Image 1 (cartoon, rainbow, N blue to C red):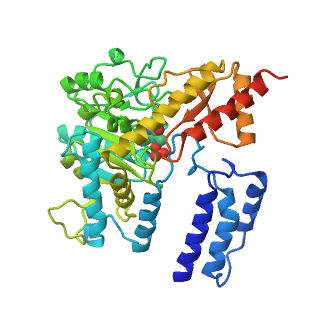
Image 2 (cartoon, helix red, strand yellow; image 1 turned 45 degrees about the vertical axis):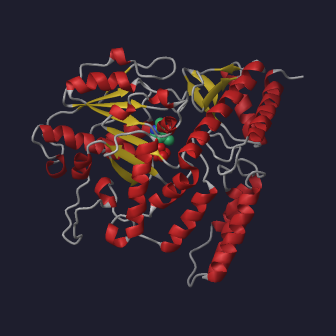
Image 3 (cartoon, rainbow, N blue to C red; image 1 turned 30 degrees about the horizontal axis):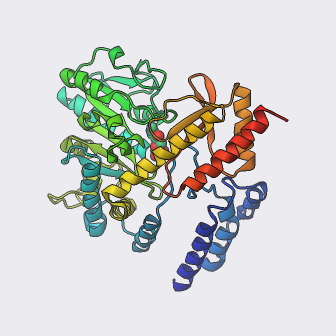
Length: 452
Ligand SMILES: *Cc1c(COP(=O)(O)O)cnc(C)c1O
């Protein structure tokens, strides 16, 4: 064991020391070398040492450098050093964190972390918090609570009776609903296409004055933090209409929720505190390792009922059990890394992280605008979408960025136009990284757009 851990530490140190210098995306050689993993399953295995060596030799170079400071693709974040340490120890513990009797410390840190999260995000302090794999599962879990709650009102237990013959649920989504919400709706039998879509404005925000008639059998799915523009639906206005009608409001706030940790940006999330259920990621803006997200539900009992397991072999007690609020049972102790991140950063540290990323997004915006390129969105958070002229030109710049690989950002389709999408969400990004990437991008774009 000792030798293995020593060797792992050496490899990880070497990897992390070089992650800022390596290409943002593996080169062709590294990609081709993955063929070393195309082995037949062996009869009697190999040594642990040799196995880990192979993993580092050909695995490490084939990684995307998303844990470095120059990765701006998707909305991804890195892993704070303290969370890597916490993750290693938690892995050594090998706790099954779904049930308290299997991991008192796993359950304890989830409780501490739940309270801290509700406090820094300024949400109803008595909410239920369930630790899941990410925002997709958090959306699923929050919407499962909604489905249960609405049908319960009509005397229907969806858990035992299922959906066949059940009273109808109306689902309302915004025009720019995230695919993970559609997937959650489809998994829940609510149908991803059987929804009323409310038109969105040019930033992707749901137009609250175009909401259909809501009633006490309606779920409204709102969004805070559009994956392109970073914009948020007018959740306060939606909640005010929904409350009168008795409708359930869910918020997909995978990364946008973190604006609430910042005094400067909190106003962008107004009304989220009124929602019934909220989904967010920890592995994005809190910068903990994958996979990690939480569902937050104001109605503790309803979420717990929706996630009920009737198992006589688990002796119940009256305290919080991690599995009360999640679809899964056995799972890793995700709360450990989240706890470590929050303890390390503190309230101010989280705020600084959010504000720093947003400030970098402003730097990108200013640098590109003054270089004569169009920023397509209103940059209020951490997302910047840029056009370099025609769709073909923009695509050519995106291809040049990927070829060069000093940094990584992906293409998107935004309001009928091809755009380069930059998301700033990593603790590791420095102003030197941002300046370097701006210089590089402007150079590449000038080569494509103004040849010679
Ligand atoms: C990333 C994201 C999701 C999905 O989150 P996962 O962690 O990938 O499951 C959902 N909604 C929005 C707005 C996102 O940005």
